Image 1 (cartoon, rainbow, N blue to C red):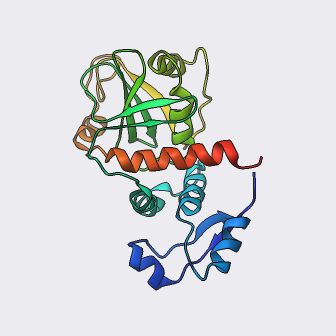
Image 2 (image 1 turned 180 degrees about the vertical axis):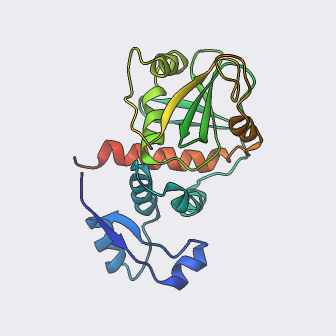
Image 3 (image 1 turned 45 degrees about the horizontal axis):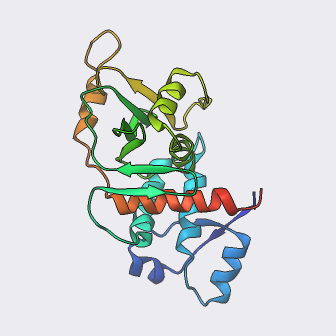
Length: 222
């Protein structure tokens, strides 16, 4: 994995793109290219750097989310609305709203709902994302998105099959048998029930995040 260097773009360049004035970690080649290109910003590298930074268990990921969301919006190829598809060489996801009242698998972090996963008719996954995806959250989705993704997600939530070890403070997978916000004993969990009102993010923005994470995961030297 290449070391990251903080890129500090000029304030007017950031404001023109609607980006907050924060440091953006990028790999050295992207940093050098940005300097050589007279300030042309490497948006995908900036998003990937923030995804990596936000994934840390002790990271203030909520502070980074506005910049990540805006970069995904800028990188989105086609904003066709709330439903779409994302795919790579060995993975596939349908993106759009899901039913939160039935059995559902979620990506969560520190009491926040990042995304909810439900099965398509063929066993592949449909995903509704509610917050920007850090590198760990996006990586978990990509790892589940091949073959029968729903069964892989069930196994992962149960800690069997392809297990994804939990890291305190980082994104993790959970299973809600009776719907989000209903505990194993049938009691309501108000802090989770309240998150049922979150808006589903536009599919094209989520595709941009997943494509960015997938491209760097496959092609960045380790």
